[in-house]
Length: 168
Image (cartoon, rainbow, N blue to C red; front, side):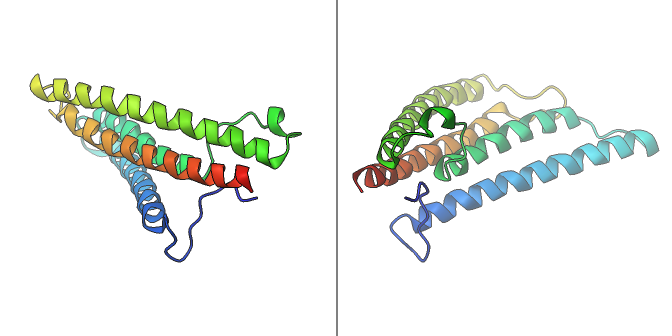
């Protein structure tokens, strides 16, 4: 039984799988960029002058990058699980419980999507920005919304795969 939604060679979910993977890789690139900013800031403090607003970039960048990993983790069943409870269960039961977990992830992502959208509108309406660099907060929310939308898609994909496995 495959508990993953792997669609090699352009399967039904192939393009979505690729999109979610690329999104996660972009999150990794963002983390690398945050590291570069921090290295420049530390080197700048020692050699010339510090990078202004480095903590704002770190704070926003790490939060956004973490959200970008969520869909990939859902798609590849890399979320926290309590295997000790399912170790002795038949594969069909494990698949059924995984389907339930996928539904919970879907509900979570849709609830957060609606609340984060409302939050983004407030951040934009009140023109909230970071203190030093004046980066608009709503821009980070926009990336979060894309991540949550992709998480919802990944949850549907894993749910369908789990239902298929539970019926097998």
